[in-house]
Length: 590
Ligand SMILES: [Zn+2]
Image (tube, rainbow, N blue to C red; front, side):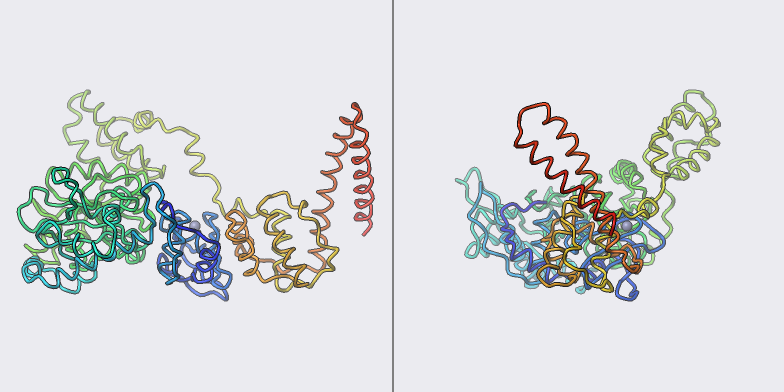
């Protein structure tokens, strides 16, 4: 999410770059092991079983041999959180206590993000204090057997009864427009736009995004309000379809366990956590979106769906299933017994019953195949055809062709049709299969370009210094990212008369994305020690390649210009050709 008018001053960005600890950021998402100067572990950005993710804390860079992602700490944070660049800078600044510059004057009713953070945090604080002061609300939590420790971990709060509690408590500190922009306050049409609290007499659940940033609130009524649950109004920050309640607390455990429990409501999350299942998130009452499914796939290989067993829950589950399967997730369905959700089951039968229901969740695809192909499906040709179509629709989103095939063969047996017929239904196109089963990224990247090798050598601390004349002009680097890196290296080299530290080069690139990513790959992809004279050789090779290219260009231009009457230009080109030919000849001799 872009947060609009945050002033991303170069000073702020640099301060964030200096402060962030890439090892800490990566460690929140994967277990890292120290290996010399590096840390290695399973890649948090793609699914893998052997570690190919490598972090260099000193240089502040990461690289994954498996999926080819690489870059600096800010890029890693962006990939893991879904924040865009400005949101990433902001959220990292907040996290490392770097003061944010005062927001620019309001633009088109837009609010600066730091203000939004302050409003949301002030509201969270207000709600928590209100709960602390309310014996009846605390009594309610006790009756629902929510331990105080859990209430604190989830920062539960209370919106007291009445229409203006929050408006009055926060009014002196914030503008009304700010409270509105935070989704906390509405305006009464009937009463001349008078502001009122959106949350009244409700238990409050603060909602955070994956990186733990407060984005909004959910509220459950404490009386018999028709709307049992309401959420913050959609704001810049609060998009229900992109959030999963509890993910910030669940993600580490989910990664360790390789699984995540998906439930419907806030209380279900708390009930599961109270039962010792901490890897739990809620989709907050909407049908599961593709964005939410992608978030889940980022943290676990297996999703256990723990939706209610009632009709609405079953329907929501059926709608969610293709989304989850499409992400390559292994899906299981936990059933809590007639009419139960995790919360009601815990209250009725205790935490063991909840845990057992989760652990014993059955394979969702196999279940669905059984449901779609009842034993009497053979009886009518029409029912066979319908079943075949339904199974094909079920299997279609599964990206893994072997998995799809295995399920399909089982289903074809049950329906009593040759499996080939199902494949026809699936109409799997051969191109997508080829792509999926193609060579892994690690193999594709083994051949390193000469330009990258040159940069790698220039940044190798074992590299002996060169005479300044050996440094080529930057044009010899044809790849724009490589050229940018070389420009920085060259400038630092000239200034200090020695090869720069990689860290200085990263800083010098000032966050230029492609260049930083390339640098991460070059530095972390593994090194061969420089051979004697290799750098000089590589550089002159690049120089020669560039000269030859340039000579060919000039040749073409000369032929064109010679037909016209621009003698001056012709003269210049002939001179350049002469000069290049001489240097090339000279290079060839040295
Ligand atoms: Zn990876």
